Image (tube, rainbow, N blue to C red; front, side):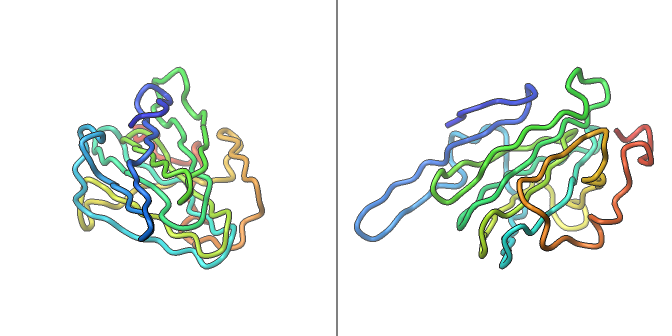
Length: 176
């Protein structure tokens, strides 16, 4: 069920779940997720609180949609509008994803996506509608002042790839 729409194209879902004496069962992909077919699913485990995945994106000219949820722990998910002609260009919103709230975010091409874990041993389920090398994203530096991303905690773990990401002004102009 869609609980919120942001930037006119990004959807926040509450996943269907049921709980009984055996535990819980959550339906990640069901009839409520329109126009998305998972081609590759990844599981990211983050042993350390404050593990950060920087701003990754796909151009609308070479689209890829991402579907992100947390199956253990909790984290803050960021969506950044990178559509250059959009009235909300470089604006961002965040939403907490956790095993308790069963929220998921569907992020289409043209939007950046970032994530920071808020607990030790957070596990994120991340699906895309492309496979292999075709499922790789571009990146923007999370410290870019034009975006002004605000993190709730200092970063404990980050990849060199994200640390060395270009700033918006350094990115190829026609890709943003």
